[in-house]
Length: 363
Image (cartoon, rainbow, N blue to C red; front, side, top):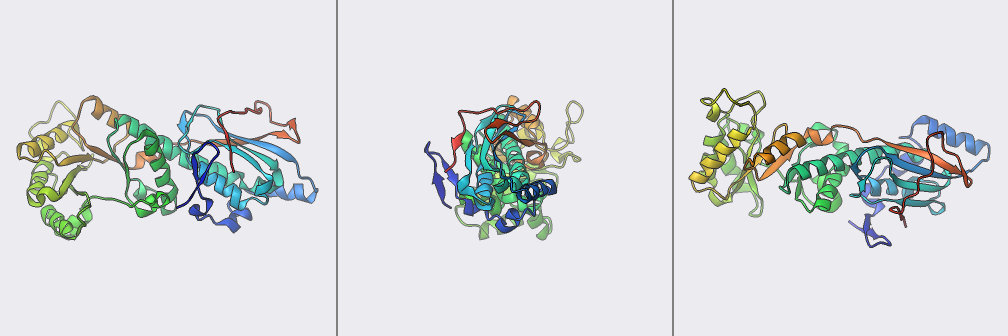
């Protein structure tokens, strides 16, 4: 992976890393048809207006997808050298209505890219912002980014990088679960001993974990799901005794429709379903009493910002959180407006040129 050093010393990813479908983007294949029609009408009239286009969104957010958007402009516009682009960086914090990018130049050279630039910024900013909120709620504890199974595989690379950026800004550890998600920064996917492997060994978690450990490289953090038999306390102890120092952690993932066996005699004054505070404390206490204080507990299964905040307020002894679908839910739409044409104000009513000293000239 290569990067471009900016005037301020911050780096942007090299455009080639994004593996863009350049010809299709340049031809307007992914573009809302009305932008293609607009460009065609202007060219037919031999009109090449010099415009300033301004991009913004409406929330407190963290920028994602900026380097990718710049790559789209560099590789897929019809005259990159004729454009003057100023932009924020991935990981920058945003205020509502703040300008994140301006594009100045012959409108016909980039009119066909508005759709894909806005879509890229919207998706990646959503992921970066959601991840940043989860990291803040987790008080610096590691997060495993686990939404790969909840969305189309083509979004994995950029989404993983957006999550990585959010972690880098906060100095927090982010793990991703596929190599695709880690590819833009040269990382690797990580994962636990899954239910599938346990099922492949007839539902025997200890046997599956043992066979996994026999295969696993020495530097792999072996983490085992312990909810297969809905008896997390017993299974966690059995796995810890079998793997000894090879075991890095156990992962609690009890379904929200089930009550773990260890809680069957304690019903009545709390919601016993899924991964809850009392279950975590029981697993922690059992591991500690048996001499496995170093074994970490990873919690997953329906975790949101709100649930993590609740766990952290209560001091629940979690070492890391696995978070899935909540990281890709919501919206963070961007808008682009032409605000100047041939040096004169040209924005629609309610929109005006809003320059920002935070924007950096893109080289």
